[in-house]
Structures are given as C-alpha cells and as structure tokens.
Image (cartoon, rainbow, N blue to C red):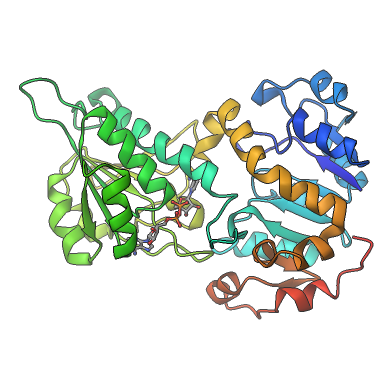
Length: 377
Ligand SMILES: NC(=O)c1ccc[n+]([C@@H]2O[C@H](COP(=O)([O-])OP(=O)(O)OC[C@H]3O[C@@H](n4cnc5c(N)ncnc54)[C@H](O)[C@@H]3O)[C@@H](O)[C@H]2O)c1
C-alpha cells in the first residue's frame, strides 16, 4: 500500500503524522511511503531523515493526496485538504466531527473512508490515540493557566504555588480523565491547592490514589461547581462525553461568581468547548476576555510542543497505521471492534452514532457502510 504524509496546515500546527521509525516499519513490511517536502521540519525531522528510512519526498500536498491509498495526518483536514480526498482513499487522523458540521459534510461528499484517532478504543474501552495528546494538553493547561494569571497578561497577578508566608492559588479541574489528572498533578507539583471534579465516583476513587490524596476530589454537580467558583483562581475544563459535543459545565452567568482576572482554560474546546463562553483560539492569539475572565481555548495545545507530541502521538498511532497498510481498511477494522469504533465516515455515510445524533444526520452501522467501500481501498 502507498501511505502518504502531508504537511499539517492548521494554524500553529507543527506536528507530523509519521516519524522515520514509522517509515522504517512500513517500508520493511513492503509498503511505499510518500512524505511532503518539509513535513517533519516543525518537529525537527528533515527530509533526509525520512529518505534514509526509505520514504520518497514529494513536492506538495497535491502529490501526497493524489498518490496515497492511505493518508495519515494529525489534525482534522482543512477545506483545501478535504477537496483533495477521493473515493477509495482512507484518511486516518483526528477529526472531532461532533461540533463541526461543515467538515462532516465535506467528508461525506468526498467518498473517502475516514477513521478518527479520537474514537478508537482499546480492549479496556480506553482511548489509546487520544490519551498521549491528553497527557500533554493536561500538562500544558496548568502551565498556560499559571502564566495567564500573571498581571501583565491580564491575570489576577498571583503566583499559583505561593511562597512561604503567602497562600498558594486554587485550581479547579472539571473532568478527571487523562487531561484532568495530568493538569491536577502539574498544579500539585507547582504547590497549588487543587479541586478535581468528575461525575464518575469510580474515577474519583482512582484519582484519590493516583494523586496521592493531595487533591480534593469532588462530585460534579451544578451547585458544587457554583459554590467553588468564587474561590478559585484557575479553572481547567477537561470533560469528555465520547464523540459528543462537550456539555457546558460553566455558563456565562456563572462567570460573575468568579474573581476578576481569574483564568479559564478550556481543553475540551476541540469537542466544542465546555464553558458557554468558549470559542477556539490559536497559539498565536491564545486568549480573550469575557466579563473580566481570561479564556484560553487553544484547540491544538500539543501542537506547541511538537518534538514531544509528534513522538508521543506516533508511538500510539504507528501499530494502527501498520495494520491499515498491511491488512487494508476492511480487514483491519473488522478484526478489531475497538478500531472499528474509529470509523466516522465511509461510503458517504456517517458511521459514528454521537456525531450523527449531534448533527441530526442519519446513522449507518460502520460494518454496513464499510461493505459499500471498494475492497481495493
Ligand atoms: N485542546 C487540545 O489541544 C486537546 C488535546 C487533547 C485532548 N483534548 C480534549 O480534552 C477533553 C478531555 O479528554 P480526556 O482524554 O481527558 O478524556 P477522558 O475520557 O479521559 O476524561 C473525560 C472525563 O470527563 C468526565 N466527565 C464527563 N462529563 C462530565 C461532566 N458533565 N462533569 C464532570 N466530568 C465529566 C468523565 O467522567 C471523564 O472522567 C476531550 O474533549 C479531548 O478531545 C483537547
């Protein structure tokens, strides 16, 4: 199979979907790999590094999309990329379709087979291709939040960890999954006082242990969140309801309860945002203010640390890329029910139920839609 790797074109995105190790594995298994010139530069990987492992460098994205049977990317395809997709081609990348009807329509119309990293599950029902980026985003969330609390950046002017004789800041993390746990552990490491909210008691039990009883675990009800908001300096939103648009856990009205200059970091922004007042921002312009509260809503947070993020991502995606290349999309997905859950669009149909539900579209069973895709793909 011919595997293609385009340069990421989303603003401030420096990751790349395949490293030279991935090229080596694929070429050793008899596949061809085409990489767009300069695709790895943002992650400090040169064209020569790819060529040394057997890849062919092509001049532009057109050549990648025209030549590849399987296109592997990092971020969701942008409009100009969707226009290059075709029937019989497989796209494997983050999609986050639920809050994005335009992209969904584009992928449906393309006829391509689209497998989303973020909805693939492992045998234990975890999200193996979301987890490494969530670990990174959780850590960045606290770092960024701490920075934005500085006065010159519009923050309250408070050092999150405090100093001897001066109390530490308070951090509220809503959503205690992978992002939430990592955000909390960095906040604890900085010396902050941490409250972590979730709706799963089992998860709160686990967090008690993994965070070594250093954070207060709290059941996430509207009233409990409302009562804590006036006390905290930084709120990190990290909820996820699989594949769906994020629920709003802080409303605009509730911003009035917070201290002026407090900071909200919405990591769930890629699923539409979990604060009512959130809208996506970029690393170049990461924040805006609503009612005196700083909002940080960067949709591709790990893109800021590509040297870490590219390797963390590809360590997780590589076995799946190899399966797709070696078995073909039909057999690879049929052999692994968790991988089949990654299928979001095939043969012009939406095959992931939460996306169809959120957008009022017809849902088609993934195996049924896959049977309509030509087997050569
Ligand atoms: N912005 C970025 O760059 C970036 C990077 C990585 C991940 N993310 C996003 O971060 C979000 C969290 O990812 P994750 O890997 O931690 O997910 P996860 O599934 O590990 O954790 C989500 C947690 O949210 C909890 N939850 C769900 N609804 C809730 C509610 N109403 N109140 C409180 N808790 C609730 C769940 O019980 C779960 O523990 C996802 O939307 C993911 O796409 C964003």
